[in-house]
Image 1 (cartoon, helix red, strand yellow):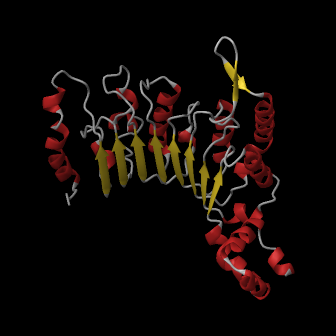
Image 2 (cartoon, one colour; image 1 turned 90 degrees about the horizontal axis):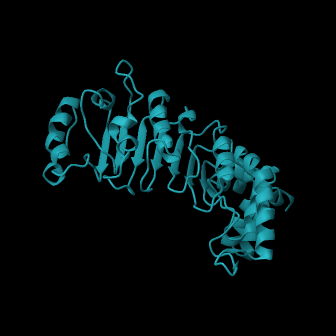
Image 3 (cartoon, helix red, strand yellow; image 1 turned 90 degrees about the vertical axis):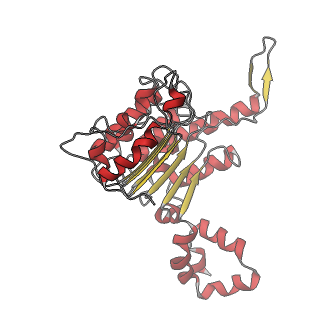
Length: 319
């Protein structure tokens, strides 16, 4: 039984949920094999969520990771999912004052303060501990604080094996330095915000995506989604067009993008964008937009009218 107890705590919990008493008795002779066979499978995906199921559970897990008390998880995890980095919860009880303002009650405030303190101390070392992670999926939440997002993104930059980065940035409170993740093979950036202007924090994130596309040597897959926008919004075009995504690329050094997925963007294939699309094996366009014009209804299908000819020039086959 001593060997069984040396297994990672997370693995023991998973095994205990799946087997009956008789099976548990026989584990003492096969626990080493179980460690080898099941650890990578069971602990492949790790999740960080500060406020679910509770602040206490979220911060306890964070502390365990930061202090090295979850070696099985940090050793075996290949996919890290980041959800809430907020100590506050939308269902926290609040107290209203006579002027209509509100604040958390004293007990909730004390819990939130303790969770904030734990995150300031443990969030970075917890994320840095995932040295084997190859993919990060991060869905930012509206209750996240700017400082927690800043700590998280800087910590993720240190992961040596990170190759896929998926960012749902509608609730981002900072400009994300995606251009600094130069070892990526695959990047996804989605933002459903309205009235996103080029010089806003989120607008600069899309500019940084363009810088990443121009400089990451092994980047072959790009997904950019801007589905929450009104195409008549002033300043929209520079943050959501194929030209903007390729604006930092040079014709002398064409990109080798193989898979391109665009949604809610303006698309024009011409002499500027065409050289960087020659290696495409997959192209997906949804909610394709054209710059606003009173005649936009009659011109809406223009891109699809010219797309077959562009595909012919690029050597693509429509199937």
